Length: 132
Image (cartoon, rainbow, N blue to C red; front, side, top):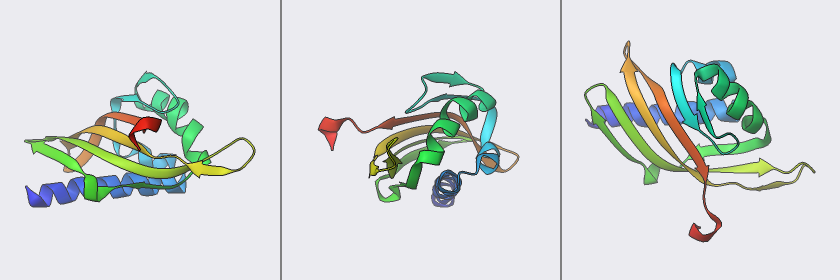
């Protein structure tokens, strides 16, 4: 189990690197085509192409320093599926170009396919102002 949790941590680090690099193509390789996601910009989105178009392309380019707080990671693995709950930190950019703190939290469901973990569901949300 420890090795598998290491794989989950590595998946999170890889995804965060894709966000920081605004690398949609690499991010695409980490998700199942039938993914369903909730985001900070878009509501519920079904399918990888709509997720990229409706969420990622509206957020990644105006985000910097995206990292998961792996010390606060909660996760579990059962057979070929895993769940993750983890906070993240980033900065967002206002329309005037100014940067501001933009922390949040994520819930992710992963499935192992062909020896690789793929996201089946992601729920990214900003921290409520009262919980920080």
